[in-house]
Length: 261
Image (cartoon, rainbow, N blue to C red; front, top):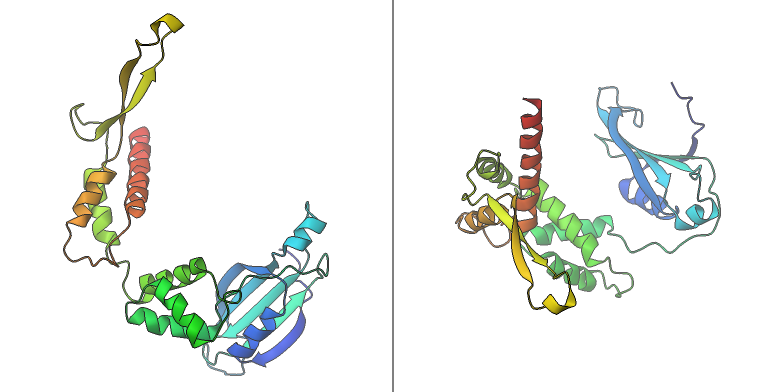
């Protein structure tokens, strides 16, 4: 069992907003572990959980100063799941005190505003423009469109039922995947066009074309079926990439089952 780290207290019993302001004073970090444990933050005697997050240094300046080792700084954030009280700890020191400017991030108020606009069915680009006018930001302090898209899409898929199509999509993929027992004229098969160059310069006009057959998934055909589903709106319709990704996962499972059988 690894030894316990010598954590030092930075703040005890903070509100969520105050804890966010304290974390903004740190150098760039990433969350390496996030799990639940029995609460030790508040004094409530009834059993309940807290959210425990371990933070690691992700500053580019520390990586440049010590490229072959990891920065020794660690952070710990404990949040009570019942009273939303936060404790913040840290241990170790940074490799260097130099800081790199951090990209703009969504604050808690921005996230609440983005959720309200997402409930109305607005797109991430429209929500980002609303953040610009609502909080009177400049373009340099406005979070990038990629950050807004990631937050809005995650909120829609987890809270607004934006991932309801996945079960139906997986069933369709399982019924249409390549298994190795199809005929060659089946539409599961495709080919790669190969241009064979002549061996001599005198025969440069005698180039030949050949098709190398190879088994492929009917991802495009599945996509055409998805487009015909009437219960999909233009916003909740799955992307072509997600169809191909699920199809590739199903092909891998079929291949493994054939080797194991």
